[in-house]
Image 1: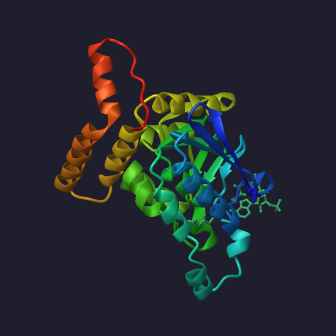
Image 2: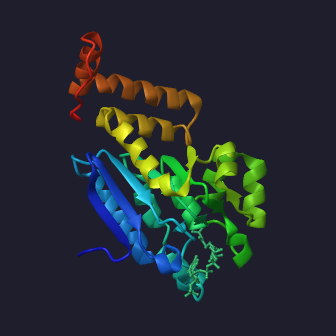
Length: 259
Ligand code: CAA
């Protein structure tokens, strides 16, 4: 079955896949079907040996303007409990390969939270980040109070969550939420450039390094260091470690295979 609300290009670039959120008329509002399609696509690409990095984008006008308010509006608490829409996000969070968010226009509510699930973010100068749920009588529900606070600190996170204020791409970069800002016509190109850079590395080392960086968000320093060390040692079981170090000694470029 072809997805309806996302476009998936497996070999958009060598070893780099592209998922584009595609509900443009609704500013890519994240309804249940779209999130299910995204979860399935990420699962498939994560299991596909030829894919090493995934670029996730919307369009120039919107990365995503949040969870679909119209779909949620009439729901009761028990409906919300039974649908458990954020359980999809738990699966997305488990993606082992790096995801680069290419953000232009609105990244609001669930859209900002989805961008924050990405491992790096390239934004266009027109990008706007915000958690405006407070304006519709609720609050962030997919990580906005936690990931935003860890990324930008309490002062700015509290202001954004309690007032719904949007921040610009430049402010987001200064606050440490995103990696870089480029003109709107270049944001996708720049995301792919970054993806290509990561795709040249050993895919095994990349996955284990991502896992270790993310570990730092939910463990103590001592346990995180222990986890990091285990992954470091484990990589010595890979052909890519032999190749990488041999290539350095022989002063040539390594050829990594992901084994
Ligand atoms: N859900 C459903 N539909 C949405 C939407 C959303 N989150 N955001 C935009 N749309 C729809 C609009 O209803 C409109 O559809 P119609 O043409 O059928 O009326 C279409 O997209 C275009 O939107 P606007 O006409 O409003 O465009 P604008 O340029 O005037 O304003 C905007 C853009 C400021 C982003 C405004 O659309 C807006 O405020 N959107 C809602 C943002 C928001 O509150 N997001 C949080 C949602 S809750 C959430 O995400 C919970 C969570 O933690 C996961």
